[in-house]
Amino acid sequence: MRRLMLLFLALASVALAQQLQAGLARVETTPKVMLPMYGYPNRTCSVAEGTHDALHAKVLVLAAGKERLAIVTIDIGTFGSAALQKRVADELGIPVLLVASSHTHSGPQFARTGQEETPVAAAQRQYRAELETMIFDAVKQASQSLFPAKLGVGRGSLQLGYNRLVLRETGRARAEFSNLSHVPYGPVDPEFVVLRVEDDAGRVRAVIVHYACHAVVMQGWNCMYSADWPGIMQSKVEAALAGSQCMFVQGGAGDINPMMMGMAKNTQEDFRVLEKMGDLISAQVLRVAREIRGVATEKASIRSKSEILPFPDRWDKTRKVEAGITTVLINDEIAIAAVPGEPMHRLQTFWKSQPDVRWPLFYGYTISVGDSWPGYIPDVRSAAFGGYGADTTTRIAVGAGDQIMQRHVINLYGLKGMWLDAPGKQ
Image (tube, rainbow, N blue to C red; front, side, top):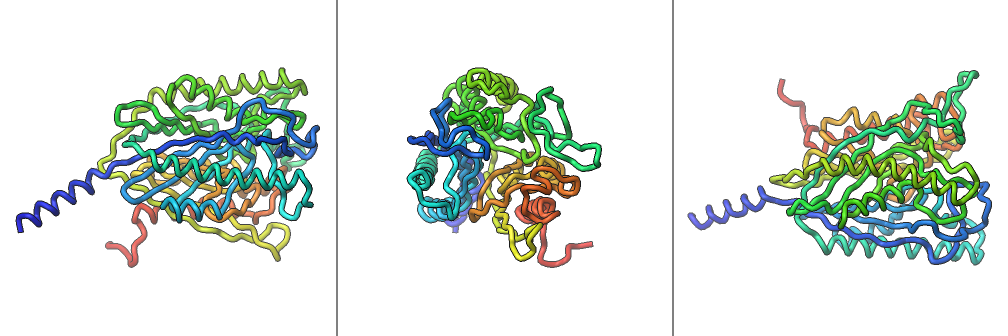
C-alpha cells in the first residue's frame, strides 16, 4: 500500500511539473528558378529577374506532455496545404499546424487551378511541391530538437501603416493605394505583440512578431524576390539577438498598407525605403523583446479547436466560401485566433478586446485546417462602406468575419472548460 502511495505521489509530481518544450528550425525557400511574381496584375516583368533578399520558412514547435503545436511562418503571398497538415499529424504526431504567410507581394506566384500547362506553370507546380517537402522536413527537424522553454509576451506600438479604405465625399469608401503624402489615414491597430521563447538558461531562442501591415513596400515594378519589410525586420532582429530566430505573423492587414512605399520606380531607391521601414520596426521590436522575461509554468498545456466554417458567397448565393479556423490556448494565458484569407484590422481588435485571457494573439493569413483561401474578410462596417476588399474583390458573405471571431471566442471559452453540459448553480 505504501509503495502504491509513493508511486501515486511520484506520478502526481511529474504531472504537476509538466514542462513546456520548444524546438526550432528554418529553411531557405527562395525558388531556384525565376517564376511569375505574386500580387500585382500589372507586374512589369513576366517572371522574377533576381533575388534581393532570401525567402524563408521558419518553424516553432511547442510541446506540453503529449500535446504538440507547430507554427510555421513563411515569406510567401499565400500558402496552405491540407495534405501537409495530414502528413505532419500522421508522421510527426503534431495535430495542429499553423502556416502563417507574411503576404509579401515580392515572392513567387503558384500556378492557378485550371491554368494552362506550360513550362512556366510546370515549374510553379514543382516549386509548390518542393515547398511542402521543405516545410515538412523543417517541422520534423524542430520536433526532434526540443529543449525546456519558457514563454514571455510583450507589447509595443508603432504606426507604420494607414487604412487604405478612405471615406470619400460620396459617403462611400474607396482605396487609396499610393498615399504619396504619407497621411496616417485611420483607423488602424498600431500595436505589435512579441512572443519570446527562451531556454532554461535564459537565452533568447526565438522571437515571434505579430503586426498588421501589408508587405507591399515594393510595388509592381519590382522584379526581385524579396520578403519585403517583414524580411528586413527579421534579419535585423536576428543580427542583434545572436543565436535567435525571428519569425513574423501577419495580422488583420486586409485594409492596412505601409505609409512607406517604394514609389520611385528605381530599384536602389525603393529598396532603401524598404530598409528604412525594417529599421524602424526592428528597433522597437528589439526594445520590447529585451524587456520580456520568460515565465516558468508549473504545468504547461496546449489545447486547441479546429473547424471549417461554411458561408454563402456574397454575390452568388449558389456558391459557398469556406474558412478553416483554429483556436489555441497555451498555458491558459496565451490564446491564438488563426484566420485564413485577408481579415481586416477591426476583426483583430475585436479578438484582442474580447477573450478572458491575458495574451490574445491574432494570426491572419494563416491556414490551419483544410486549404481553402476565402480572400478578403471585411468586418460589417467595412463591408457596408465598401471599397477594395470590402465589397469589390471579396466573396465571403456580409457578417462572416464577425461570425468567425465570435466563433473563436466561443471556442476559447470551451478550451477553458467554461461550457457545461447542464445549467450551473444559481
